[in-house]
Length: 104
Image (cartoon, rainbow, N blue to C red; front, side, top):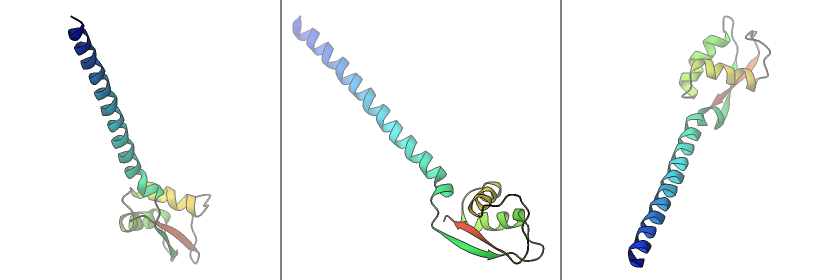
């Protein structure tokens, strides 16, 4: 009787341990995937200076350079350009240089 009780208790403890280990594994995998997804925004490998020419717009530049330098959408890349260059609006003038984050 006691051996059945202890055997049943061991199976419960082993089951609980298995659930805890699986939850920890899920958290680690989920957390690392989230970091990889946001890595384009945060893991900048360098910067490219771009001279602004007549007719250039922030939308045009973000479409071009988002594809070339990152895996994020042009609108997200545009926000990164704005933050990086401390721009107060979408307006850019020719003759200035903007820093483009290089993420890939």
